[in-house]
Image 1 (cartoon, chains in turn green, yellow):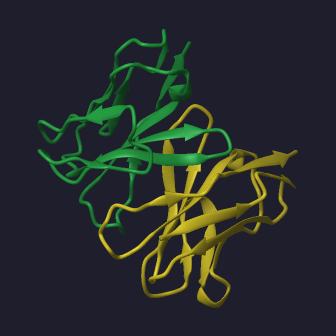
Image 2 (cartoon, helix red, strand yellow):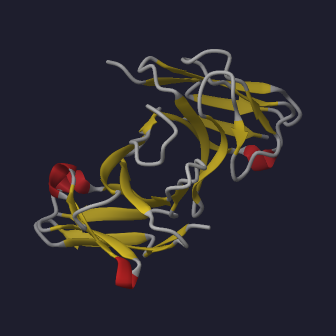
Image 3 (tube, rainbow over the protein chains, first blue to last red):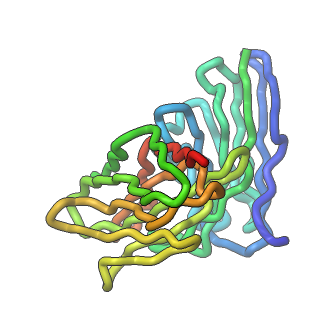
Length: 114
Length: 114
């Protein structure tokens, strides 16, 4: 079934360690996104990419970086993890960057930073 | 700037009863409005959306929502709740600027009582 694959599904990480969350989509969507979901705060946009080769900052980008070397992959890197980055991370995509399109979500990566 | 307020972080209804989940938005330009549903341990999926045209929109699983500009609301309803409707529901707003601004509300957890 076509869709978005995230890895790992769950990870416990020591503070200060580097971590990359992987996201791959097979729908040939141009736009991809990373959100974090925290209780009582809903989903907040970390970074986005309108098309391969471009990225942009969302609402809460500090401490995170992304790259978009090709259409399918959009990894999220925490250079030096801190406990406040404990969250559930969702990768999403849509066909293009216009705001009327449906977002398709992965199943999430639960990250705990100790 | 856009924002979304979802009134009630938890809503409980009896099976067969009306479901009403409230969403009010703030936007300085005509909005695009969305409802997404999240089942346990899954990503979000689109229920319905309003972009232009008819203000009453129908979505999957018998849900519908009405865009009321005068009330800045986009409440989600379903005439008769099923057990399978138990999930978390997110209202989201974006606009026509093309700036990748999709703002999510904090979510409403729906419980259906047998």
